[in-house]
Image 1 (spheres, rainbow, N blue to C red):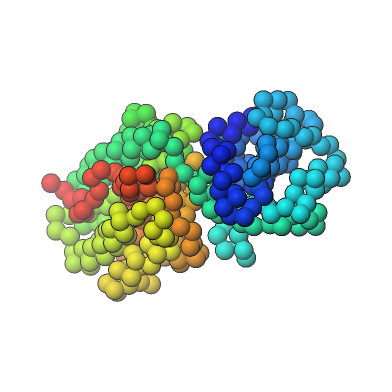
Image 2: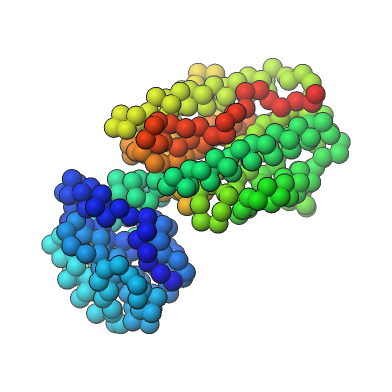
Amino acid sequence: MAITLDRLNMDELRGMLKSLGLDGWLLYDFKGANPIARRVLGLGGLITRRVFVWLPATGVPVALVHRIEAHGFAEFPGTLRLYGSWRELEQELASLVRGRRVALETSPSGGVPYLDRVPAGTVHVLERIGAVLSGSAPLVSRFASAWSAAERRDHETAADAIATIARAAVADAVRAPGTATETSVQRGVTAAMHRAGLIVSDPPVVAFGANAANPHYEPRPDRDIVLAPHTVVLLDLWGRAKPDTVFADQTWMGFSGAAVPDDVERVWMAVRDARDTALERVRRWRAGSGLTGAMLDDAAREVVAARGFGEAFLHRTGHSIDGELHGSGPNLDNFETNDTREFVTGVGFSVEPGVYLPGRFGVRSEVNAYLADDGAHVTPREIQRELIRPD
């Protein structure tokens, strides 16, 4: 285990804390419960006892760790304080945060679960010992979810590889009704991703026909089906170029027939146009413009609703991507949650509207975007415009 603080520009963090009227950021973790803390701190390995790291607006960082795990923090770039009993822990915490305005991973009423990482009991202790708590959302977006330049390059590499694999896999499948099965396509895609050098955390989702109407469908051998002619094909796949970098996450659609029926075409066009409407606003983003994930979700959802499929759009328009596939930064969401966090330079996310008609078929189109100093970038470089069909 180790805490490196390599991701942090401490001068920038101190300046941001002061501008927010905060005395410091208290990062907490226990057995991996807070991925925000682990990413910000560069925390590797399993922590079996509670650990707190105080990042003050003035002064040096302080790590508060249990004595039996002190060996893992010998090179911590700040002050190391040790505790053994719960009484010592509370005493040391009080010396750090009593009377101070403290940023913490909490979300009012649990409104954004990706920000609500500190247990209620710990929050209660901090309030009892005199900390004045504030949500850390702006800090999370800037210092936890922002991609480094190396991560952007890794993402682009993975995105282009995934797009190439997906296009080929869907094209092969729609040319093979009566032969291709969900699990055979899944195995082929997984193997292709490994050959491309991608890290695959979970197998891709392959769904035919009515199975595509389940947004979280998972193919299994005990319920495998053979692709029928004139059937929708959905392929959702994700991976990354290195174990500790950011993901690329895409969904591609096909149809195993030369002529696409009107109902399928209408749904595809609604989803594609909703995606493109959100992307148009993303491409106009500039730092400080006030764009939020809730705004993008509203824009995409309005398109789908106008086409008559509003009730069939069952999930948010997109999710944050950082060290986790579903990251802690701003989501494109005013449906499951009201995510009003402003997009800032460095964050990345998916854009993936979908329409799901139970017993019939579902359609989703997913691309990614990240925000850099020179504006918004969309991946992959060539996004899907039409359903993939047999030649």
